[in-house]
View 1 (cartoon, rainbow, N blue to C red):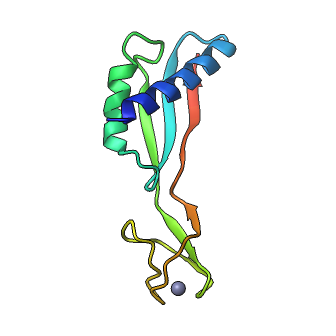
View 2 (cartoon, helix red, strand yellow):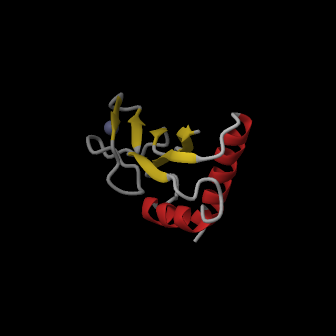
View 3 (cartoon, rainbow, N blue to C red):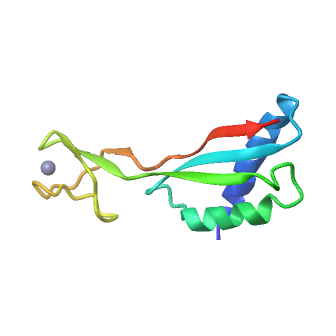
Length: 113
Ligand SMILES: [Zn+2]
């Protein structure tokens, strides 16, 4: 489960930020996870429970904002949401290589004190 490694990195960033601000506790961590990021939100939430133990984020609530995949079709000149990993335009059935969103994997907010 590679989510543990990813969570460790996210927590390291969050902890560093908290220390910089002189905070001693993290209350809320919000992360944005795209459908194409390769991360399973449920697995990431589980990884949080495991990796936050014994850190200043132990009591924090971990929230995930999911970002659906979105591709751009150059033929139809419009955005579409691919239904599978194959990014086929539902209108003209061309393959799109222009992924506009869905690969996000980032911290978006922290509540600290
Ligand atoms: Zn199209």
